[in-house]
Amino acid sequence: MKKRPATVEERREETHFQLADALPPELLDIIFWYASEDKATILACTLVSQNWRGLALPYLFSAVEIAGHRSLGRFNDFSNFINMHPNIARYVRRLELVGVSDTHQDTPYATSLSSLAAVITKLAGLRVLYLREVFFDSEPLSSSSSSFVFPRRLEKLTIDFCNCQCREEELMVFCLPALVGALQTFPADSVSLSYLLVADALPEDHRMALIASTPSLVNVRDLILNRLDTAHRDDYDLGHILDTLRQVLAQGCLRSLQARPYTDSTYSKMAKKSLGVLLRHIGSTLQELALPFLIRLPIPLTEDEPYGWDVIRLHECRNLQSFTIWLYPPELRSSPESPGVYDYDDVPLSTVCIAIMAHLPPTLRIFTLGLCEDSDVEHIMLKEVGLEALDDALSGHRFSSLEKVNIMMGSTRDWDSDAFIDMDVCAQVTRKIMPRCAERGVLEIFEEPVSVGI
Image 1 (cartoon, rainbow, N blue to C red):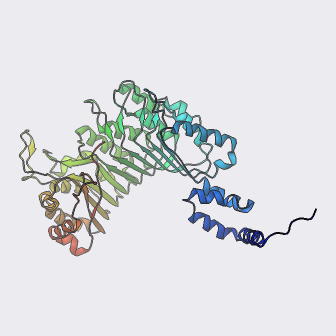
Image 2: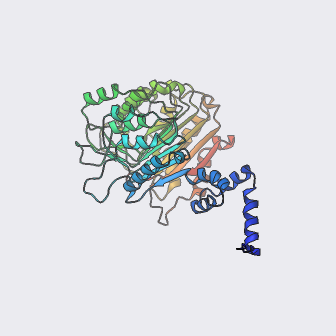
């Protein structure tokens, strides 16, 4: 039986496939890179030919996101898929796990670090791991971190809004053993910890013994602490988190420590001392630092003088290039009734900044002042901060190497409302208040939203 001659349309389609298959691999790679966000298009490209399939598959599986109310089942499906197709595992570069828990049960299903590590160790090409709203168990460190060997370090590890089983806490918290376990189980160059309600579920002596028995110290180059909080118990403080980091971080490993506090956060003498011990441990190599404290009224006695900040040991940061400090400006004029504090008319917040800056090295090139506020009169708030004195301090000989002075405006207001910061007004007023920095061309004013604690 004779074969039916191909129609004109069929011959044209066959020609198109032949031409497409003949494209240089370098050109196809560029095309697939541009289309990599569209998974449906990449999937269709894998069906064109064997040549296209081999080039398109890495882009199809380069970023895997597992999210939704059935994310636990999807994570198990992904684990089974990786076991059945080990050749696909090497293509995964970014893995996002969002809400890996059973939200239909009264008690959420706890995902162990071991179960996550068992899957992630099979992803030889993984660069970025993002964990959000994941519910962990608080298993011992030795069972989670020493049983798996990663083929390579992650470029970035992000842990947001995560919780864990904590029998001694009624709140949904992220206990310190789980935090240490995550840092050791998933080694990464850059680590971001955001919106974690951290508590220690163990007695102090047990916690210290647990940390002392960790199999290895953690080497992290960049660490971001974004609006961490404690479980609002009298015996817990931000200092517990800083102490734990000091005990698990390898000495001199950090290049950048960026912290952004809650707008309603406070700090204690213990937290200041803990920061000083941490900076003594990692300060020699630190190049970027943002204080984890929000400076606000009322100002305790001695904090308007340099010796009041000796305890945080900023002088240990001998190679510091960038420094950030967050202020919460006053909204209304009021005199505090508590003894041992100042009224802001007598001691503006800029005085505290200058006292802290007395400990900064002359190597500083970038100074950033973050202003968290929620008033409708931002330009008046700027005057109350006392930026004139700060302008004089930054223009002195000590900071002659400054290349940039950033004034970062934040807001705690609802961004769905009509109330926004008038940045043009803020910029004009700031340049008038800080003329010396403006004349040097180093002054920049910009806006960054700052959220109230969730």
